[in-house]
Length: 234
Image (cartoon, rainbow, N blue to C red; front, side, top):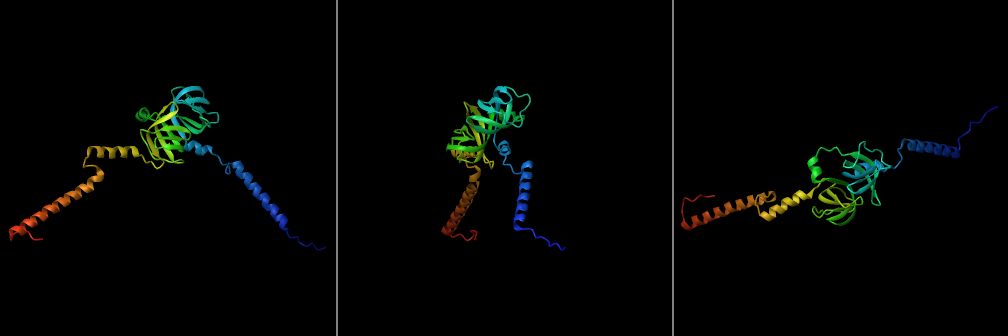
C-alpha cells in the first residue's frame, strides 16, 4: 500500500511560529532582558548628598531635613547613624525621598563639603525663574547663582539645605557648564575698567597699531610741508 506524503498546512505552520515566539518572550522575561527596570536609571542619575540629621533605622531616616524611605533600597550601608554623610539615589514622592540605593559618602574633598555640604543631581521638574526652581521635586533657591534653565534639563546643584530648600551657591548643567566663574570675571572687568581682560586684548593691540599708523601719517605731512628731500619714501 502506497502512502502519500502529507504537506504541512498553513494553520500548523502559524501555530508553530506562535509557540516559538512565546518561548522567546518567556526566555527574555526570565533573564530580565525585557523588563523596563527604572531603578538603574534612578540610581545612576538622581542623587542627594548630605548629612543624616535624624535616624530611626536603615530604612527610615532624614538627610538634612529631607525624609528618606529606604525600605525598597537595594543596599544600605553598615554603621550609618546621625551625623553620617550619605549619598542617596532615588526619587521624591509626596515630599519623601524613596531611595533605591544608599551609600556612605567617603569623599576626601572636605573643603568642598564644608563650603557646599549638600549636592543634588537630577532633572529640573519645575521652573519659575533663574533663582527659583525644583530638581526632582526638591525646591532650589539659586538667587546667589542664577541660571537660565528649563524643565527637563539635567543639573548639579551645590549648596546648603535650609528648611527643605537647597540654597544654591553653584549650579552646573549636564554639559559641565558653570557660568558662575565666568560671570564673576566679566563683572570684575566691567567694574574696574581694566584693559587686560582677556576678551579685550585683541582690541588693545589693534588700537596700538592704529596709533603707530597715525604717527606715520603725521610725519609724512611734516615732510610735505618742509619740502625736505631726505624724508623716508615708502
